Amino acid sequence: LSNNGDYVAKRKNHNYLERKRRNDLRSRFLALRDQVPGLASCPKTPKVVILSKSSEYLQSLISAEQRMAAEKRQLRLRQMQLLRQIAQLKGH
Image 1 (cartoon, one colour):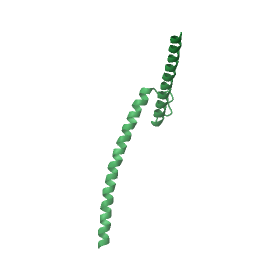
Image 2 (cartoon, rainbow, N blue to C red; image 1 turned 90 degrees about the vertical axis):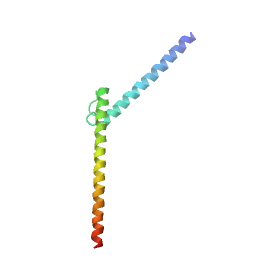
Image 3 (cartoon, one colour; image 1 turned 60 degrees about the horizontal axis):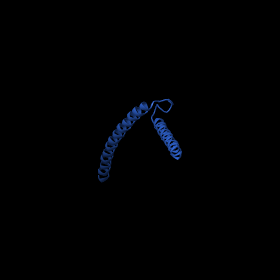
Image 4 (cartoon, rainbow, N blue to C red; image 1 turned 120 degrees about the horizontal axis):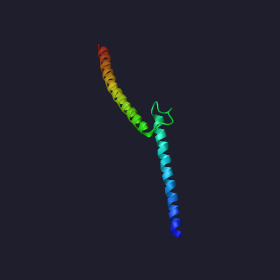
């Protein structure tokens, strides 16, 4: 009888932990969905769509960051050129 009680207690605990894990996973998918433009307003978005759209969005952010970093380098070079010009003009 004690073994049966132990088994039931273990199953209840296991079921509780599994339910908690699934709820946590679900809430993380919802949080991820809400960060992706165009998905936040879609309450029944499948997980595979959330993952694929998140990946696409991340790639677009990486591309934008690389583009902005290149633009920043160009602007810094231009700034240095202009500062040199100013220094030359002040020297004359």
